[in-house]
Length: 347
Length: 101
Image (cartoon, rainbow over all chains, first blue to last red; front, side, top):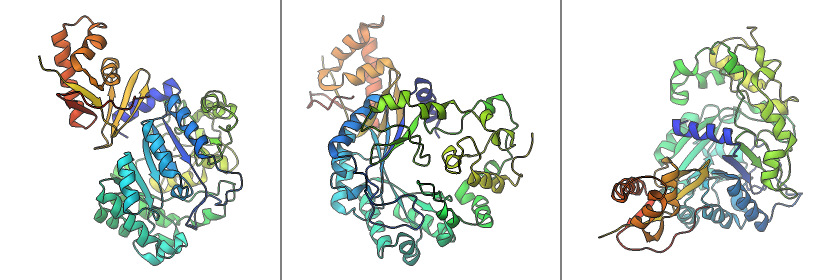
């Protein structure tokens, strides 16, 4: 994070401003990725165009700057570009998360004209049989890559995300090279999270500890190894008075049905914009207030763990394991694999 | 005396945070924050009001500074922002831009 970005984040926290929001405009999708945490049927009625336009106005008034438009596949909504245009007219910084297979030259030109800042697309492998095997859609790699070429030809910034799982564990280098050839950025995500409904069956797709270790020992992927694998800093009051991440503090997530959660990975129902103004939920939701009240010293296991000062503990994953003040086992595993230091080591 | 006309680019993201404007250029993703004076100039950048008039109303009335010094400072600021595609600077009035919320 740049120093200016960190400064803005700190100021937003102090002012109680929701700097970043992810808005899923649909859960419907034209791919069926084996690791996806969503159910794709629309059984509750997505927010209408008018409802989302009104919500965007509310978000702008609340001070939201970074808006991630996602799904499901957001472009399955016929009004998706209209909604992005409305967001841009309100001068949001818009990131579009899409599998891109519906993006042709016309859509790429339109996204460029609208001033979308970044398009983020998941590419699981440079090999079609692996990528298409994960998405469940034949030809999806070819179509996503064609879309990225259209987007790049228009001058848009594209980030390729490679979610790592057992099916593609050896392919991240190929995807990285592909992204470089396309002029796209590259990020690797080695974590498969549970379904939002709590079903943990897909967590079994996570790569093994040995494979995770290989990722964490690869400077091409993690940068400075010495820094990345450094032992955690000594625990002090500043660390124990800290909070884990921006979820619910300066960021939140809104579902296609108007549900507000602290984060897309933290499905704690905190209000619904169909029955309440966003700003009222943001300021007064008892659930968000509870999330904001939690400090590292309030975590019964983590506050006793030597990793507490550098752990990437996700409170949402802990919540999905049954206790938002508990440990997130995926992050415990990462802390151990990253540093080689045993977990929950008494201080 | 010649003057400049400034208009906000539509290729930016912007939001007011605690009285200061955050702006990100879609051209190069550079992030800026403008102090309150620069924010006032930014908000007045409608493409049709001369920069000298903006400075006179938004800066000189707020601070004890000579109009010429304030104008030169403002000119440096708008030229810097123009380099990043955030402001459009012209010798002639331009079409009004969308207001910044």
